[in-house]
Amino acid sequence: DAKTTQPNSMESNEEEPVHLPCNHSTISGTDYIHWYRQLPSQGPEYVIHGLTSNVNNRMASLAIAEDRKSSTLILHRATLRDAAVYYCIPLGGSQGNLIFGKGTKLSVKP
Amino acid sequence: DAGVIQSPRHEVTEMGQEVTLRCKPISGHDYLFWYRQTMMRGLELLIYFNNNVPIDDSGMPEDRFSAKMPNASFSTLKIQPSEPRDSAVYFCASSPKGTGGLNTEAFFGQGTRLTVV
Image (cartoon, rainbow over the protein chains, first blue to last red):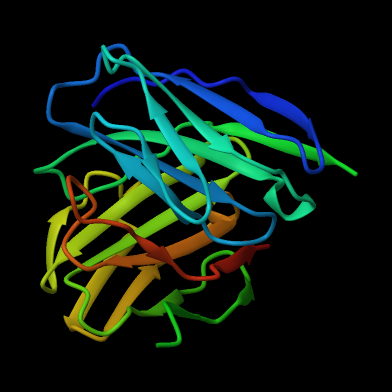
């Protein structure tokens, strides 16, 4: 499994963009990069995933470096509800399982 | 669909007692996962099933833990006998076709908070 490095914590102001980085230098060529988040007292929830191209959905954008050794989850306008732990998870196409690291705890200030 | 349903939401039991946690996955999902979360160890994958068959149970901490999936709509995680160090939040998740590659997101239940005293 590819190792990941994420900041332990980050702070943001409400309604400002947030860029959450993840280093995954040992990622293999077929690994997708998945992001999940866990709101307080809830189970994790899927945010977004991608392979090489940048991806957008209603929750966030995912920017993947050209060499795929890092990626950035972008929340375009942080809300108080976005305060959560964010996990970056490289995952191969043939794997069935999600392995969570420590993630980044995002705090959002009003 | 109501999502992944876990029961009970909270369980308090005495050391040595048997504990059974239950999970109903989302209908039509082929994969089911059991996780445990503690402050010290974070989220740990215990076991996962594909089409009701256990695929990888290497995360099950010891023989006191067992998991079954008798049919596509129900799974149990049993701890017998329970110990205080088993206190944690246990999550069940399901996924349509596995979580790798194109497919996939995993949907998590609300969790069962287990306290063993």
